[in-house]
Length: 393
Ligand SMILES: *Cc1c(COP(=O)(O)O)cnc(C)c1O
Image 1 (cartoon, rainbow, N blue to C red):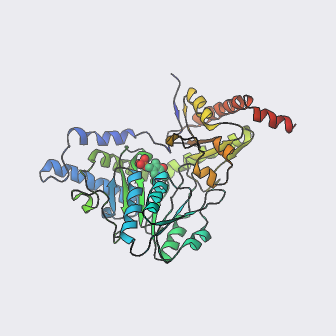
Image 2 (image 1 turned 90 degrees about the vertical axis):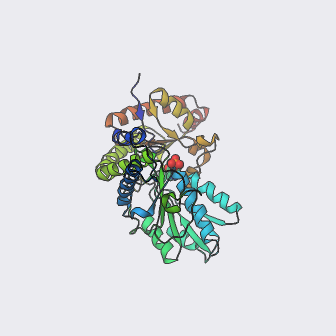
């Protein structure tokens, strides 16, 4: 079998072996319910407290500001819906961006049906929110600003601290979807004026189905899941102890490795970018050239279909992602690529490659060689390309 080259770490990551190992005893040996009085239950509770401390530490937050959820989507839903409900008497206006994850965008659409008003900010050609536009969008009835920390498709990092400053200067709550950023880039909730932050375990080499919402102390949002008194009465349901333990371990590893991993990934990322732009004609880089996640690249190749590229890369043992919203089963181009101004046909020819700490230079070289071959082959079958070449000769 061909060696697998996994370059889709923005979709999900491999659970680190240390994480899986840390989780195992909480399935087999320490299976107690964290709410139970006896010592088996206390083992679970202590493990959860330790994980919460590791996660809070990475954010500069307090332990009791971390609320575990079943993932990033739940945390995003909770932040938006519960804030809207709790602050509706103050106002019914929310500001977000056109490039958010669907967990935010679809929740905003739901809130619009409930009578809230949402402003979706434009971004510039690199996918960065314009601060002047944000300031202009603020109204007396604005209750929440939600801007993602880093984009999952094009990797662009937002000026989070500046956005937080603007929110707080105007007495507005600030939420950030940091699912792609937590554990990858440094985040400090106080310094960056973040009131709520969403994250997910499986994006940082932790397990799937576990996430958290950071809620700054003093914010009055209500429980999202009603039931028992878990998570300080704000998120009912028997805690996913193995998931929480694994997430805590993943956060610990991220804290230890972040700097070195980011440096290594950035070098490989920039090497990948420069090879593609040099060796593949009619290719463009999407997202900001520098202010982007260390592990993200996103290209558009003219006269090529992203989906066809993915299938051919898969035959070479390479896992990647394209710019179509394939998860929704639709062939519409990505809302993010349209928001940065790409025409439909170019957005359709997009490819996202996201590296991990395990990606090697050999992986990158093999991938670039495969892309060159595939793009050439697909273009040789494209009447549009033939036409284009003839006209430009
Ligand atoms: C993956 C992702 C989510 C959803 O997280 P899940 O844990 O898969 O529900 C939300 N926002 C962004 C930016 C993501 O990349």
